[in-house]
Image 1 (cartoon, one colour):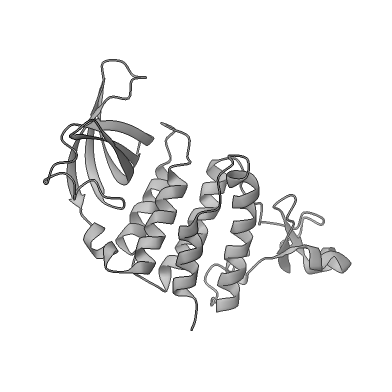
Image 2 (cartoon, rainbow, N blue to C red; image 1 turned 90 degrees about the vertical axis):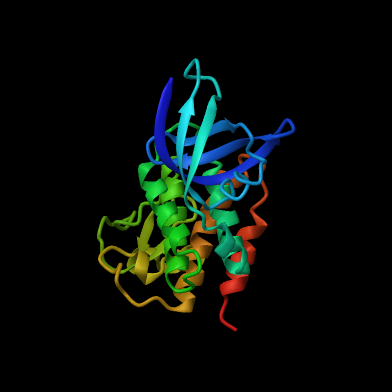
Length: 241
């Protein structure tokens, strides 16, 4: 068995004295592990850092074996990432989420999103918005996607200002009524037809509270995984002073 694919390095762990088991999010083969012989060498160690883009050739005798990787570096981003605390926290969070995806299940959209974010990991304006979209896409990939297209009660697409914390569906102002205080705010830039609207600091904070609620409820808690410190650290690093 053999295939060749582009991937983003999510992480790795030492195996034996010289090798590394590397985890990639690949374009066509999803989250995939493989053994890199000599991965702890001076030549390969910088290539196998989280966030780097690589070309990987995977080989195994039988498909369900872990197999081995031949790795070629395409974009070695790690050096730039290490120069920024915010970028380092962002990479740790994004790669941590990707490592929770089902193994070997193709995720082409998430791979493209992750690769693009790694290219602009130091962009303090664009990256937070992209991270919200990635978290929403990640939830959808695991089967917990939010339905923000229309009001859960009326079916209308206008005046959507809330999300039900129970169902993950949008709720209009009129339908919310006296229960508005129990609902999660839906920021304007996530409403249908308003993707290009201006994003305020309050909108961004509301968006991260929204995704945080469902990440904790549907992803971290069922897996008995603590919410990552890297996410909190990133949000603190980009918070207005």
